[in-house]
Length: 366
Image (tube, rainbow, N blue to C red; front, side, top):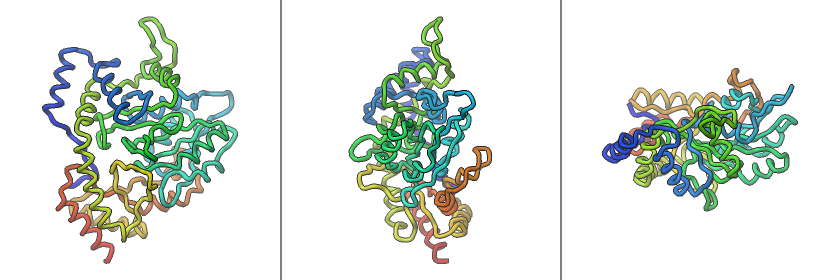
């Protein structure tokens, strides 16, 4: 079975080298040498400052909310944050888990990112933040969103889980907002097995978050902050360093897969519209079909032929009861019903990809 994505596994010899160092130092966690090295190298590679490594991408979001005061409690007032329904559930569930009510605003029908016009219309007196998503690594309208945030004195936390290495207008997409969070889950372009990171705009927010991820402990007998255990360990960092060592090779292979799909399918299916100034990372290849029936028929045919395509993101989150049903997002609901993400990973052979394309084209004319 060809999966929709597959973890990139770097050289075992290179990984063993890093693991040997861990065994020699016997330092497994608590800001070890490899975590420090990975932090420095990621800041350099991504072109950012104030990067904090954490145990996973969901904790990255939750720590960002806390460090920026979004989830601070007030008597008889529940904080709110405006976000998109067209995303992985963790974007919204992390807000709800932290006591922040997610308010969904609809997406742009072409970029599939949060539409700034709908954001401003959704603001209430209890809104504290905007949590946009760079969907599939595509850039939100960062200028418009940041303008709205300044006008209404709101924090902006970009869920940039898919945007590793993406540049927009010649600069890292991660430099926008008060914070941007990354997921380093095993299926991501860059991964640490499990893991994540936060890029803060201000060093003061970074320093507060550093305390939070270690139970608020700042010394052997000092606790200064309400915290949790969200630290990345040395084994995660070792995997990340290996993957980073081989990033260019991985990117090149994925780009070839992405462009073959684009050449074959761009004239018959709706692809995600990207701004010209975007330097993309080829993390995903989503396509939108004419109808939900057609999308489901293609998914079934692919599965019958040993290929998994995923309805990513489905369902549109305004329909998920545990998040607090918040209707009125017809574009997100429509795109979510008709979308499939096609397999894309560095080891996908051209003959396998050609078979996927042929199966799709056959269904489109059926």
